[in-house]
Amino acid sequence: MRYILLLSLALITTIHSVQSQILPERDRASLIDKILAERFDHVLPDIMDRTGIDMWVLITREYNEDPVVKTMLPSTWLNARRRTILVFNYDSDKFKVEKLAVARYNIGDNITSAWNKEEEPDQWQALLKIIEVRNPKKIALNYSDDYGIADGISKTDYDLFLNVLPASYKSRVVSAEPLAVAWIETRSAVEMQLFEELVGVTHDIINEAFSSKVITPGKTTTEDVVWFMRQKVTDLGLETWFHPTIDIQRSDEPLESHITAFTNHNEGQIILPGDLLHCDFGITYLRLNTDVQEHAYVLKKGETQAPQFLVDAFAKGNQVQDIFTSHFETGKTGNTILKEALTEARSEGLRPSIYTHPLGLYGHSAGPTIGMWDSQEGVPGTGDYKLFENTAYAIELNTTVNIPEWNKDIRIMLEEDGFWGPKGFEYINKRQEELILVD
Image (cartoon, rainbow, N blue to C red; front, side):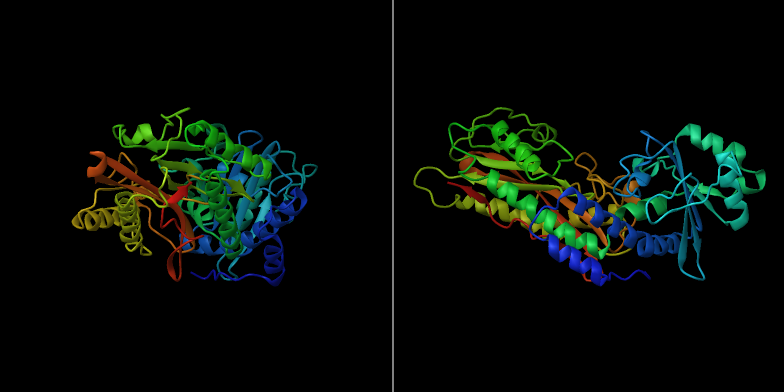
């Protein structure tokens, strides 16, 4: 890849100034726009070069925004305006992208208006003139069978575009899926530095939620903890991209199905000493999203640590993580990684389930899907997509462990955010390696 993860001095200074604090809205906007400029200048030409697409046309309308376009709007644009048309034209000789908007005004500082309505009243004809002058080999539109994020053009806009496009150009129209996915999945150096801070905040909220500050055994319910987390996020000026869940596994209750465990079946259940708690929690900040699942144990009277059988069970979850991430390799498909990891884990006597997904500008983002909880034989389409460097993932999985002391199976469900880059795999802000203890 030509794109090298380098930070400009100005951005380094900005990042260092925001560590360990949540920025006010004005400063957030400034940072979002700087990150966006870096992505347009470095990420976009690299992925257009890699995918072999020399013209990318994105067409969307206000309140029906293409998911990709939403990630390209400047910080002060909360929506597209009227019909918004973006054109990115790649010059391979100069390794540079011309960024145009068929709109009455510039779209922030990065995309220049290329439509004078007084000279050409018809927006579609203005777009056609841009295409004819540049004569691209490919004209990529955001339609996709496999990725909803890359399927953003509406049927109306698709039909209108093809109706105005001359027959000689129609054969050049292709799906922008590989380019749209690459834009969504590729992380810049600045984003990764912010990501580390954001995952750290996520871990801090979980640690506070799983503490005696929040939980009084015999009194506090799972819903009390859920709403503490939601309120904490709001109080910090952040957002959640999904409603958190807290569930319980304990000695006198059967192991629920996987899907039940993720639908908050313990709503309002009182937390008791000896419970194994589990959370699923993620937050959004500066257009990045986290996704974390961790476990806590509620100490019984006289206990100072979790029972060894739970400590050992938790270690098996870390073991599955290590096996899984050891199979990451640039160019492998998600389905290949899944098959290799499951085969090795099962050979070690483990009972794993892997359902890892890309993470970043969206929570359930675009990129290689590495299993789904109900598709452990592979995922057609998104599982066939290959692993590329400079991408982030929610390393989401579980392993089932028999606990003789409880006369039942339990499920260790873990999810930690990780990064695949030139140096290999690393967790973005550590991972849980021991149970959180609620005293």
